[in-house]
Length: 346
Image (cartoon, rainbow, N blue to C red):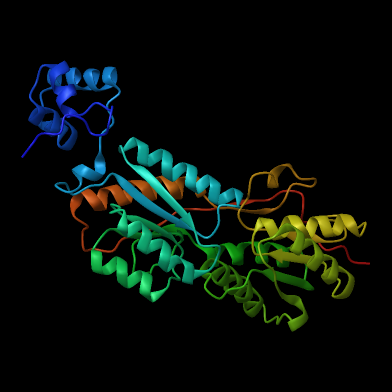
C-alpha cells in the first residue's frame, strides 16, 4: 500500500512532520493518538515540527482507526437568544481545553427538525451530543441509542431523567419568582409563558408558578394565563393588551425576553415599573441588569452548564460511556432588582 506523503494537496502530512522531528511516521501517529506513550523530549520535537510546518491533523481519516473524531455536537432551540449564546461559548471553550471542537445546530423550537439535525451529526461521526431539555423526538433518540454514543440533556434538571442531565431546576425558578410577588402582597398576577408543548423548560416554570398559587389556595383565572413566543415585539403587543384589559398589579414572565417586552409595553402606555406594575423574569439575559429599572429575575448559570456539559461528554466518551445515569443540578441565583415592589393599597 503506497504511503500518502501529504494529507491534502500542498499540505504537509505526518511524513513531513516525522522527517523534520527526526522520528518515524509511526511515532508521530502515536503522538497524536496516544501522546502519553511518547517520551516528553520527543513530544516537544514533534509539536515544534508540526507548528513549523503548519501541519493540521486529519481527524476524520484517523477516526477510521480511532475511537474519537474529535468533534462533539450541540443542538439548541435557537441561537438568537443571549443566554444560549453564553451556553454555546462556554461549551465550545471548554471543549478546546480537551482538544475537541463543536458542531452546533438550532431547531427553532421545532423538535421534528431535530431528527434531521441528529442524522446529519451522526453522519459526521461525532463523539457525543448535548441536547437542550428533556423533550425530544422518539426517532432522533432511537438513532442516537442505536449508535451508542454519549448523549446528555442540558439546561433543565430532572432527577428522573432517562438521560444524564446537567441543568437548573426550572420548577423552582417558576416558584421563586411567583412567591416573590405574592410575598409582596400581589394577588392579581398575570402569567405569561411560552408554549409548553415540546418545551419542558417553559412547562416546568409554569408548573412551579401555579404550584405557589395552589399552596395559597388561589386560582388564577383564564384571563390571567397567557402564551407568548420568545419575541420582544410580540411580548410588547401582548403586554399592552394585558395591561389595558386585565390590568394586573404584577406579571410573571417565563423568561427575560418576555419580561423586556412587558416593560416596553408599560413604557408605551406611560405606566411606571414597579409603582404601577411589578414585573419578574427568568434567565437574567445580558442587559437585564442594565434596564431602567433593573429586572428582577432568576440567574440561570448558562456558562457553568456549558462548561460542565463539555467535561461530562468528553469523560463519557473516553471512559466508554459508564452505564450509570448521573444527574447534576446547578444552582440558580435570585436577582432582586428594581422591577418589583410591594403592592400599594389605596
